[in-house]
Image (cartoon, rainbow, N blue to C red):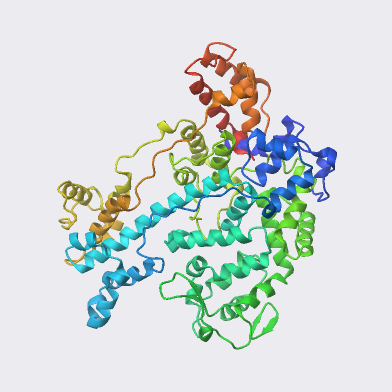
Length: 624
């Protein structure tokens, strides 16, 4: 797939069919008429306000009026959802109130040589098993109490990573099962907006808690989102507001709440940030960093001046002051529009959107209702011109294949990460750039591979001892091979000998300087990698469950041309016609040996999957 070709398709995708309305609809926020509503526009709506759907789901929306269809999606609280299963936790942490920060304090003291300088009582408290969560097995195999803590530090980091991957499978399972697709789509939008990464949090429970908060308020009032996210434990850790205390203000959260969460650069001053940081003091966490605490004695209760407002401002006041700024409605309206409709907007349209959000007092549901009913949403500029994000690409494929359960193989987290997006791990506080940034020479080829692995999961590459690759990269082969040899004898205690073969200036060489006779970081990293897969064992392997033969037979498809047309219509938002369509027909005919489909052929399923792989590799498939 050629990147320039995809950009061209983005600009002229609607030339192939009559799906969108006339060009005059572009920029018009007035609602479409009843006569303008049809099945194709229902498919467009479900693609943007969800993750696409099966022909049956699309037809169900098309059978309603446009107003009822949009209301059902946007005001989803009125829709009785299925009983979605709770995430089945492995139980990787010792207790609900324990967090890795307790172990981390001891680990840091060991790493930087301050542990043995503490008073005996302090050392005993810091190294207690209640705080470090050293297991009996770690204690048994460790040479010293320091090594046991080092082993525990890396173990809990690894199992948290594995558990977060299980959570991602659970999240896509929600997408497949829910009757409220926009709710899950909004959760992903707000996750990218209030971007928080488990790379720093390293506690999947905090990330799950943040997602629960976003899900509860997803289509509610932006004021509640902006205020509530400041109390969220994951955000408090990620942007350091748990360290924002009277007399020692930390400005990280105050800066990002203005620049990235509400106003945008250029709409505040450095003084506004400093003053807002003082207003946000006291919102912190309990000692184990597991729950929000409002420490009023640590709040700066003196006068502050933020964005022109002066007073003894409290944390809740900051959100209200921000929402009163004209820049806020422009910033949020534009960002929502770019996520759900299209990248390019005019100044005039942005002002209309901003006014709409203000008129709705920052209520998200009525704002989205107006957008999804608008002529502009169904105009050529907005229709099938959005490049799918990796999550949309994979989850959308699952939806259109009609999957009822999320596969555990290949891993959803691995598929999307290989394309540049992994839930819980945005690249930075800005979130994902989206749009054309999703497509580059590397991801173009990988998108075709991902489609292949979904259709032919047995072809997914298997890396032997993949869980140990991080250790190999850190230590180099010389030390790594020693660990493997020791492990074969059941020895997880001894340290490696020498540093021969370690690249000069490598991370391994630098890390080795921090190890001593009483602890070894490499040993901790290796042990953690080995035992983490026991702590979070792989889920039973379940590939995507679907049958193209049953799908086409049920639709009454009888020949190769019909199969091509059916699959193009089901999986693409951009029609493919002429010689390109005919090439696909000839391909299937060559695969099957004739123009007529013989459903008794045991190879027909594979042949149809080969055809679908070609379709999912087309530039058009990348468009939503």
